[in-house]
Length: 457
Image 1: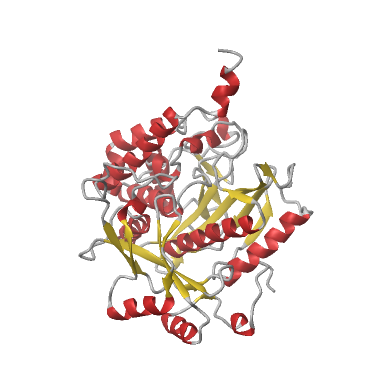
Image 2 (image 1 turned 90 degrees about the vertical axis):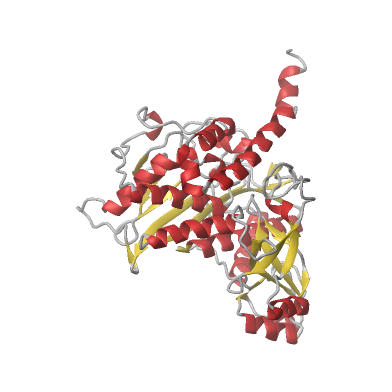
């Protein structure tokens, strides 16, 4: 029996683990070690969406050159509750919510040890004529990576994720365990199982630790190519939720799961040129020009791309508490965790940490936003203001982080930056989703409304 509590036969124990080739998949299917393949499209929230396809049928479709599967286009035009939203250009009642093709990226086939006999393959959304669906998050990121490649640059990223592990609606631990190595048994068992399935899924964690809030956990992933890092992150999130539910627990990736608690998705990022780190900094040397232009682009551009890295009403509650390790100003500094952009590392490992995204963000859209801003900074040779020294929350010279989604949406729609960086169609698509999110919350009566209104109004 594995740490996940699943009985395995000898054949199960021999099945391939992690990323595998198409030929390895064929062999596993032939020997009945893989029975199901899940071609998955990351949706607007970064969730994996698709169907369970009989493995032999999947191979037949791949061999014939057909799409691995089909899906209703609404998987890229929905809210967090999977309610199909009308009036998107992509789909709606005007065309009966038509299908799109799901084309497997055959370099991303992986076995999921927490789902025996199952393989996952990340996939791209296409129209009937095999043209890419441009609003799909994976496609959006690829376009930005192509723009950087045209400048002779490659972006490498490492993602640092926070979430809160709960039993019911209460955290599994009741106090600050930041950096503690003395974990409650339920949390220690969960860590061991998570590390095992991530390793077996080809997306190993670099480090796992408890964080500063009750029940809060941080998982850090190794540095690598941006698209692969985002693919791996979606597997991690899928696995985390699955393992938690098997233990009657809940892993919440809300940006602000409790009042005064914030969970981030910190983006560690550097640029490389001809296989060499473009941000490399030696002691006593000035910061490389490429890095300064990248910082200038991030500081100038990210205020106009808020719905990509802070997509929900709840996202902005993470910024509301001062000195809570979430930025409140669009500033930057050296090894300063209160800044929106932190320069960290040393020597060849010098890189940027973008601390704006919350745990609820879609990693593909987070990296898309960062890359679009960096391309802007590089092409316009932007130079940032002086780095913040001291308390970044007291920096009154820097632009404030948006107070809510409505404010962020106004900057996204009414400034030319987002349209120039992403294209008008993409701005309309994600703006429509953000309007739907705002409208939903305007209609809802919350527990706070009732608590403050029943006896006081």
